[in-house]
Amino acid sequence: MPSFLASSAALVLALANHACCQPVTTLVECGEFVKIYDPSVGEDTDWYINDHCFIQAKDGRWHLFGITHEEPLNPADEDNLAHATAGRLLQRPWDKRPFALTVAPEEPWSEQHLWAPHVVEHDSLYYMYYCAGDADHTRYKIHLATSPDLGGWKRHTNNPMVVDGYDARDPFLMRVGEKWVMYYTANSAPAGGNHLVAYVVSDDLVNWSEREIAFTDPTSGTFGGPCESPFVVRRGDKYFLFIGPRGGYDGTDVFVSDTPYSWEIEDRVGHLPAHAAEVVRNGRGDWFVSRCGWGKGGVYLAPLRWLDGQRDPETNLPVARTLDATQ
Image 1 (cartoon, one colour):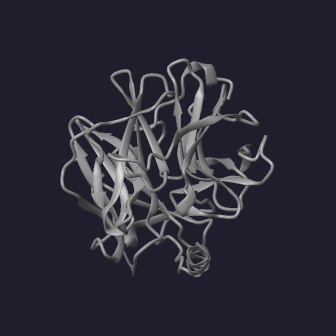
Image 2 (spheres, helix red, strand yellow):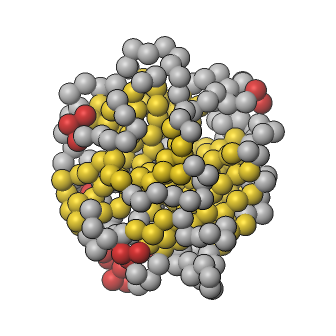
């Protein structure tokens, strides 16, 4: 494990030196971050939250799920998914809940760890996708668990949903027409290569197509890389891809495209000081972006400002339910 930690620390330093060119045109920026959730509450040691997601339940309450572990960083030992709730998006602090899910190393799941959950709702059922890892880094698994109420998660018998490498992880789902698209980070070859954002497509959230490529970075490697934590926002007929770490550990770049299936590196239109950024809206329709990470003490939100000239365009991110109308 010490060698793994040393490699992780070296990766962070390498990412801090990753080139960060200025966008030709800035179409998105953010304001000041404020802390909304501290996972160390009630613990004897400091804890962190890494890749996470937000979802609002039918009763209007907000739920946060994410990677968690006590400091210092130990990705291979991240065996539980954090859970927190709030009545308002900007509630300070959010309420800590018991772990949402714990790693299942036994057959048939053979999970190594629990990383980067993403939750969507469809037909009154919640679907949580997360990276379950594997002893073989070229065959990392993305698993699915479901719940009728954002609690009591049950692993799907069809797992794994995706098998890919190197260290395929960080799923994000979006509805495109009648299809579901799952984006995730991987490499051009399972054993290593260009860092990229891949995607698969499904009609039913369970059976997925062969992978396609949405974004390819010129840098190469195996674990880590600058294409993690993909998040896609549709605004009208434009699609914005958020990925990182870029320009440092606390860095997310934003790229724009006319299609949800392809972005080019020259289409960069923003840089945000955030690690594993997620985008979310409150009941007034205001936009926010989150940040988190190793040694950061929790989850933070900042106002997200769009400079694309569009006023209230159609989007995949709905305004929050009325319980949050006062923020």
